Length: 248
Ligand SMILES: NC(=O)c1ccc[n+]([C@@H]2O[C@H](COP(=O)([O-])OP(=O)(O)OC[C@H]3O[C@@H](n4cnc5c(N)ncnc54)[C@H](OP(=O)(O)O)[C@@H]3O)[C@@H](O)[C@H]2O)c1
Image 1 (tube, rainbow, N blue to C red):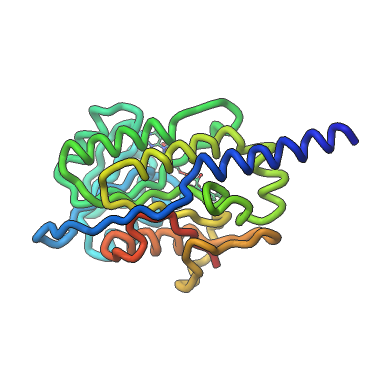
Image 2 (cartoon, rainbow, N blue to C red):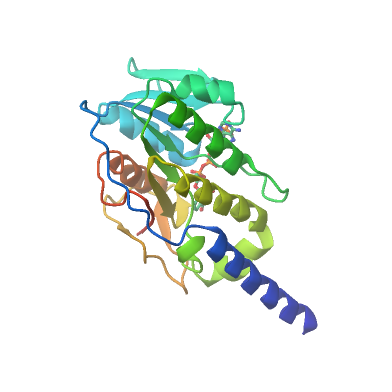
């Protein structure tokens, strides 16, 4: 009984920390007209689940794409409009090389080191933001997750009371740091917070907004639909300066 009570106090404390640590407010940002169409896009995390969907869809939509990847052999796509830069997001020099000359950056960075304190998401994102500032690249679309800032609890009870407190507290702590860094930048940014990701077939229709998800049930969405929504944020200014949830 005491253990259960301690766990509940811990889970509530974690939720409060993630609520305070992640983004809660809207930053007023006006897009700066660049005078030329947005065509060149860097994708970070292109070998991952969402990243592969981003890559395929970005090429389909006619973008000139650069993928920053650690292991180029993991990419099965070949296209004359695709450039692959081998590098690690934690290595500033490779990030800078990949960012140079782009019109926008999309990040679907993630990893599986759930049980160790890491700063991969926040340090990697800091490198991206810094390279973007250096090279005057304005638009940044970054995938984080529901369950942070003003979306705490919106992944449903199973995630709020089991997955986040037992498996992902350190990971989400770093995601909260990542969101704060993005919000503190002077870029045109959109944070996209998906519900639980699946590899199911895309539906092409989904809910998006700052108050979506469920406090009870596990909300889900296919990675392909998340990729579709993220790509739309490259040219749509409606959610600039906000963290927007997306789920079926
Ligand atoms: N799973 C869910 O239900 C869920 C729900 C909401 C949000 N999210 C978040 O959504 C994001 C994408 O998730 P996902 O499952 O689609 O992606 P994923 O399969 O975990 O892919 C992550 C990508 O990040 C890359 N990466 C990791 N460390 C890197 C480094 N140091 N330098 C360069 N690239 C690096 C990986 O490259 P390698 O191929 O080389 O490892 C991979 O391409 C993650 O942030 C995840 O936490 C997930």
